[in-house]
Length: 468
Image (cartoon, rainbow, N blue to C red):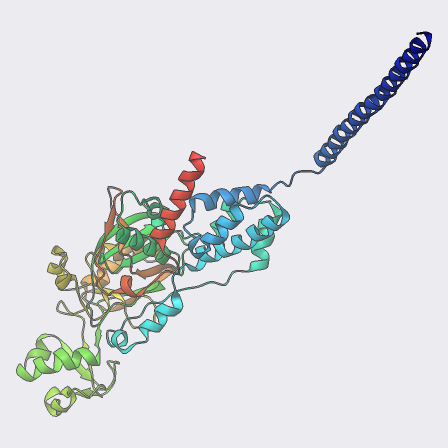
């Protein structure tokens, strides 16, 4: 019995000792886990401190301003760079983003300065015989940007983006007004694209930096004088018919001629003057038309009856070796005054004896000239430019005018002249007016992007960003 008690005691002590050995092992595991957890927390805090020490990349003032301009395409010059803009917009701020934004700025300024019209395609189309036959000429004036200088201005942050772009922005008062009317909720797809095309046309005016200029807009057949950026005079015109179109160009009004002679072109002599003179022997005398060897009045004289004219009426004959000149008179086709601006197409503005045409807005009444522009109120315009743009007194000019004397008067301040083809314009009530595409330029003059599609895409993206 004693032995049993001894054995039981030994077993119990052994058991207790065994259990006592397991406790320290569990405590070590827990301590190790706590230590590892503490180390992990310390590591995360250290990493967080390191991250916080790295400065966040911040865009410059000009970069932020430019992105804001792009968001609304304030200057309507994003054009074919939409995908590039969207890619840059979604990039995290970084040196790479800044570099790509800088390159986009150059493209944006170039689009503003030289338009987004596909000029190569347009010029190729005009070379086709169909357009040559109609004497379709459309001058486009591009300017090369100094890329290095432009980007230096951009990077210096001394001037705002708007200030930098001001140099390349058209001065025409309707430029931003037309951009404001680009509303897809109010315009059809055709109207929107047409309006966008006309905004691009304003970018190509040669003397766009001048606040004083004359605009002769062919589709609306009207004359507008802008002074200090405001329209001071406006009246009707008669322009070239489809077969003898008024060329689209820019020049400068340099002088005007009082009581001018009219040097009748061979084409008009062949179509009108010779046939009428053959039918009516008094036609030339009644119209005060003389015949000379050239367009100088002191050159050799000819009598109509001494020349065999019928051979010059044949279709294949282009040149006539005799020149018809209409002397100053009340029946002169040029009227009593013509306004000259140098150009290779020999077109000008002038008075007209057919004042009845200005009472109608019909195409067959207002598109009838051989290319020159007839003015509704030439005398009041002559008075204005004499008073404001020449050293002459209007009293002396008026005396010359009334005496039927021919006189050339030079301008001391030349006025830029733009013959334009704008088929979307702003009316007096502020609404957009769309004009008929008589010469067909809206059809053949394309943009290098799809305006309506682009605007719908941008609109949807901006809407989704606002929702999110």
